Length: 321
Image (cartoon, rainbow, N blue to C red; front, top):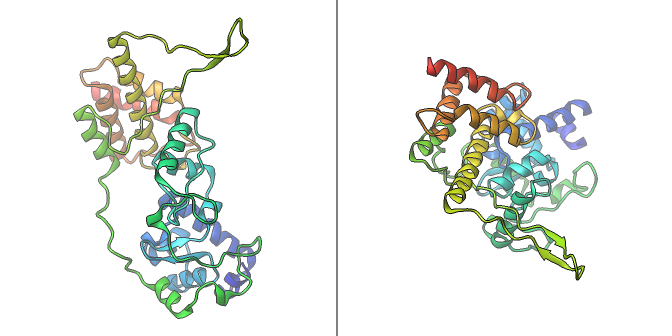
């Protein structure tokens, strides 16, 4: 922290605020920690930094808070430690890794989602030397880690072997070639709704395993048999589960919903789907149309997920009239 203060000539409270703003920006726009996807100017605008953007980024690199990266240009140092639970859960649900290859934490996910995440990451990763699973394709050159609680290396000369190359990498605006940006969320949801399917990156939750209960005579454990369902009931069950997963992802990816705390609960999802039932179109298509109209009108959610059922009801009423 002291090195960042010295390089930018600012008091301690201002340097702390700058780092907090950097982490908040990453949580909103670069949850994997690949902050280098943004240009230096965009980073400065996101932090509301009024000074020279290149000097600021160079200072963050030189003091060990940003690391150069071949794929993303710049990544946040030890972002997996600084990111909050909401970032970890968002990456785990999307089956993504942090930019440095580390696996997100998924201990706070619901049981069925946690089991699915455990299975996915167990099959997709191999333990590195430090004991944390990491994708082999995402392993980058090791950099000496901070050795005190402030995250500042004792010897700044050992952070990077070539300080001149590091400065050049930090100031460079154009990163390596990246794939074309994804289609807007509302467009993806609308297309998926018309086809009666969910987007490819949706991962419907896995039905919980049978519970265990004591056997009446032997005192041991026996599995409670799975309730028998007719083919029609089973199809209805699967459709309802897919609809709920579709609605959950649609609400989470709505523009501005990232500021809300945690994921939408089952009560909110149930109310949104109930408003979309008994209409001329399927529920998922009605929900996508309502969210698209709300997004075009630049409607932003307030402080609660219950904002969505209230506004969706108003928009569906206008559409019906």
